[in-house]
Image 1 (spheres, rainbow, N blue to C red):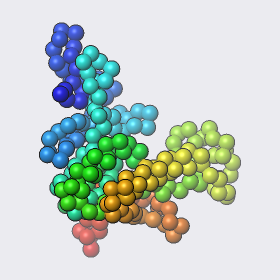
Image 2 (image 1 turned 90 degrees about the vertical axis):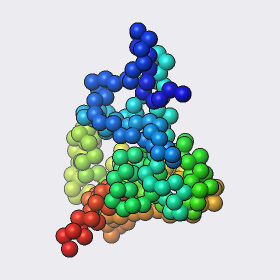
Image 3 (image 1 turned 30 degrees about the horizontal axis):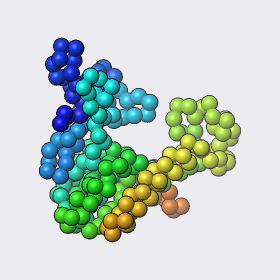
Length: 229
């Protein structure tokens, strides 16, 4: 079986597909045996709103896709497992907490999650915590701060400082992430795994306060507070 990103060049030699557009550092994705089964690239120069892409050679001669595997950071079959987005985030969160993380590529990229959780359950996992980024509770009011295109939005051109105007893009993003959260809950319940949601950095309205986004950021923030106390 070929590794993700490997392809044959014109001379028939095997090589790994890289390009100037995909320059960055590699983030390994490991299975339950600790073997590297894929890799993401943390881009030096993000584009189209993307900071990470898969190392892949899908469209090249004898190339192969990444397969979007689930990354395990921690111990197979740990009684309690946290599910988050991205292998780097999971590795950092594991290093900071010692807890076990299963890492999907994104909240709505759950195709490989059922077999992963089933295997973990057979080895002893009982409880799953959904620990996706806190933009699952993103405030949806327009603040002219979603991206550089906000200045061209009709709502932004209004006096948004004195009105609560919903941002369509923020609403769609929140709905999409929450769809992934619900899917994870559904998968766990179908497998008879206990499932809970982990949240942090919330305001009085129950929305994200927009200070600490990822679970790795949250754990790092806790460590900093301990160090300064």
